[in-house]
Amino acid sequence: MSKDRGLHASRRGFLALAGLGAAAGAVGAGGAAPVAAQATRARIVIIGAGAGGTALANRLVQRLDGATITLLDPRPDHLYQPGLSLVAAGLKPPAYVVSRTADWLPRGVTLIPEPAAAIDPVARTVATASGQRLDYDFLVLAPGLVLDYGAIEGFSTDLIGSNGIGALYGGPDAAAKTWQAARRYAEEGGVGLFTRPATEMKCAGAPLKHTFLIDDIAQRAAPGKHEIRYACPQAALFSVPIVAEKVRMLFGERGIATHYGHTLTAIDPGTRRATFATVTRDAAGVETRSDTQLDYDYLHVIPPQRAPEVIRQSGLSWADKWVDQGWAEVDQKTLRHLRFPEVFAIGDVAGVPKGKTAASVKWQVPVVEDHLVAAIAGGEGTASYDGYTSCPLITRVGRAMLVEFDYNNNLVPSFPGVIAPLEELWISWLMKEVALKATYNAMLRGRA
Amino acid sequence: MKELTYGTMIAVFEEIFGRSLFWVMVAVAAAVTLAYLFVLIRDRAISWRKFLLAQLSMPVGAVAAVLFVLRVTHSGLRDIGGPIDVIVLLAVAGIGAVGLAILVYTVQSLLRPGRDGI
Image 1: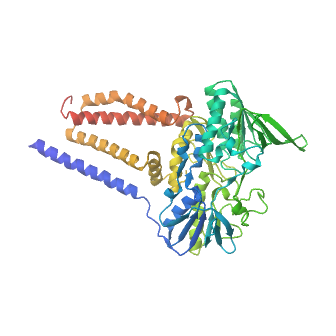
Image 2 (image 1 turned 120 degrees about the vertical axis):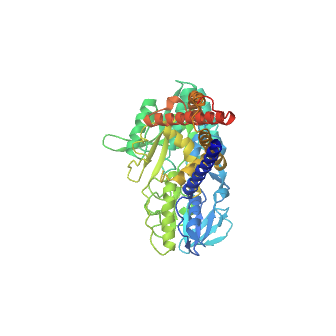
Image 3 (image 1 turned 120 degrees about the horizontal axis):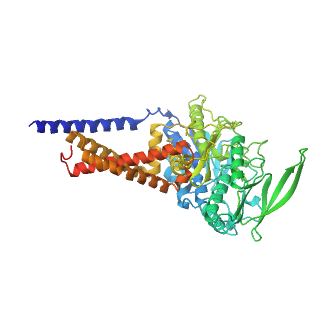
């Protein structure tokens, strides 16, 4: 009898416990209370449905009620560009970086699968390639950038993967072909020549990551058969001095030779010889310009990068900065155009120092959202972008440095005292390899 | 990381494993935990015989968890670079050990609900 009662009681206790657990879960999953959506009839055009355009669209549909949001992007595929370095080192398949643009977009927005052909910021219209005319109240520029392969004489994208040539920036196929060439080099040995352009570029850490990864893979595949060289137009290995020094020390430890002041101008795939425009300074600071040729068995090409032609032709670019590149003339903190306040820019195309990474986009999107929604409500936004960028700088398969910095070249670690920014750590590698794409996808959905 | 909120963490885990797999894993973990609590409450005592076998399984769980994580992340023990890496590795081992111990104890109790060994 007493046993029966005990069992009964214990069952009830068990169910109560289970119920409590479920209730706790429900409360936890609820999260913060949603902010009331702003009612509006505003017409918003977003040029580009990449990381910036998609993330912003997902956030705007939650903040605005009744707005007409139109995205323009001719490419059906969405590319997770931070994964290209991993594809080009044989660590992930090309499909790892590819998804469908339309799958990320919220209901209630329109995606026009065409590029923007012309922008008239005075009349506030955008013309598409097929001649469709879109009037806007607000315009967001997020078209990314253009890889100017033509600036390197003798280079063509058909060459990627053959003749010892890699160029991972071109997309999943280019990254996979880059790995074909790099793997052959890792097995056979010789001189590996790694370059970067003189222009602003996406993820300034990527040229270093590729150098470190291929060096590591080569040393494991055929130790002692490789000579690695890194050639850059700049006078330092990274724009943030403290990081540049750390990379200089790592290059020293790994025996990677550095050629500063070297801008790749031409290649001869037949003889495997690269030509660089070089600048040297003597003790008095007098510059001497000349051409230098370096032989290679493997060459990694990163072409100059510029704003898309439609931006450069629209009068929205800086007139006195980056004149050969054409980035949009926006305020550093608000990302709002300096002459056309109803125009914003996100990501690669924004004419701000640094900031051409997915991590920057993650910080920029809420700032543009804040100012755009505030403008619709008739007020002024308060959010400010401080130039934050992060770069999980891979130094070998299994280790990375989680480098985060701002406009002022200050290190701004997310986990101070726990994850040291200038230490080669396994946990930083885990973040790049496992957590980063997840965070990125959450960002695309407007949830992080 | 901008804000490491509860919601962000869930979003990140959903993306790592896929939404359905993540919630299936959460459900399995919750079910095992509830089953464990159930047998504890039902039996009103720890069976030390079952607990012994559960304890013996702990090193297996620890090693298996570490090997699994190293394998899926293309890394090895030589990549452990600082104190935080050691802590993460120990945490992985600890989770594997405790998880397997709870599972082994619960399975034994559910299969052989007896008062043996108390």
